[in-house]
Length: 110
Image (tube, rainbow, N blue to C red):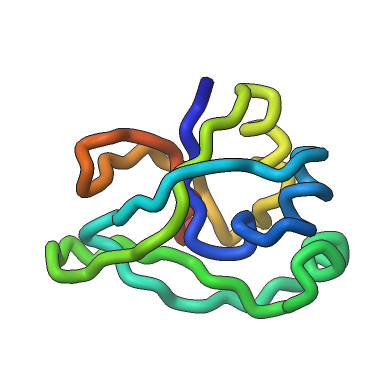
């Protein structure tokens, strides 16, 4: 199983159903050294699923005082590919360590 951290639209039930075909369950987690910004989305399918055209995006700050709260989901490798397809080119997937010491994937600014 893979672990995927969401701080934005992947936490929305409709996006989960559209992307994974099911509702995900996860645990609260905190990512340090990143800050949240926004990005304008133009992909019509992503806008239709999320209902918004401005999404959150993470930028690495290197500042331990910068934290982002979200949910760490356990998903399959196949579901991770579906998440990759959902995220637009403004994002890239990287593996990170969380405050708890757990590791997982997160989408950050490309």
